Structure formats: C-alpha cells, structure tokens
Length: 248
Ligand code: NI
Image (cartoon, protein in one colour):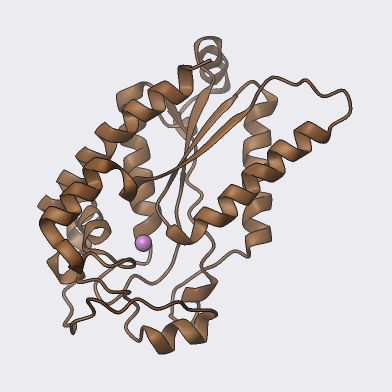
C-alpha cells in the first residue's frame, strides 16, 4: 500500500491497527557503463513495495537522492550533503510520528547512505530524549540494506562469485533490468574484478574508478536474475518487517 495513493482518512484508519511504515531510500548517481542513474532508488522502491504488499504495510514516498558526493564527477549524479540528508530524514520521520507512526523501517539501496542514516536516527532520538517533559511514545527506527539479506548474499555468490563487486553490481543492475526491460543498456567494459580501494572526494573516485564501477562485472546482469533477487529480498525482509512492526 503506497501512502501516496491513500486518503488521510484511510491513513487514520490504518493507524488504529498498525504503527509501522516502510521508507525506501536510495540515490541518484552514476552506476557504471550499463547501470541506470536511478538504480539505488529503483531497487529500494521495488523491494519496499514488495515488502509492503507481503506485510500489509504502508510504504512512504521514496527518498531518491542521497549521500553521493563521491559520484559527482560523473554526469547525471545528484547528491545531498550528509547534513541535508539528515534534515530530510528528520522532517520525514517527525511528520509521520506527529500523527501516530512509531515504527520506521527504512529499506536502503545505497551503501553511501548507511552512516548518514544512522546519524540521522541518533539525532531524532536525541531530540526526543532531550525534549522537556520527555516520555513521548517510543519511536523505533531501523535501516535495512536490501542487498545484505542472507538469501540475496547467497544468490549473488552463486550467480556472480567475486564479480559482484561493491558498486554498479550485477545484482542491482539485474533488478533494474527486470523492472525496466525497455531501458536495458549494452556497453563494452573491461575487467574490473578485484579493484577495491578507499576513495575520498569525487575527483579521487573518478581517478580510481574511471568507468564508475567498483570491482564489479554488471555485464552479467539479466532481467531473470533481477526477478530472483527481488523475490528473495522481499521474502527475507518481509519476515523481518513483521517482527519489527509488532514486537513490544
Ligand atoms: Ni547502487
């Protein structure tokens, strides 16, 4: 159930029996020679919609621009500073919490968001803990990276081995190919397997990774693989969401 497709009365009725909401968060950034700029947001949104359907949960609008300064030397990338992203997350959460949502389950499509989302969660909790009077209803915030579930990791190892890499991976490119078969791109690319070095700013990143990938071979991507990744991620995460939304 998408929040965007409900009326306010329907959301009010939902809150009588549930307190949880799923928040997809991604990024808008280069994804190598054949990956779509929207890959991280597309993957997070698809997994979130699947989990929402499986668990009967509301899914909020996707936060589709993230912490991606290191990709800015490539055309099409849009980045928020960490401080901006934290402010966006705080306002998003507090808007919904104001009217009764208490469990926020973020489904993330971008590794670069992890530290910032964690810091944003701590800011939100701190604001509540320091508030005069205190003792507001408990708020729980969780971040789930879709590519890290046991089932997804197993499938990636089985299909791609050490050619998965860590950016513009064949797994995430497969998911976008399943979702948007008309946007599948063909591109020649050399062997990038094994190259994984720490980077700093956008210029440094482009010097180290000239075609945008980090250690991956996204030419192995296929829509059929994408279907399997999506199904596996939804199954694994729906179970975790149910527990998160209902445990005391
Ligand atoms: Ni990505």
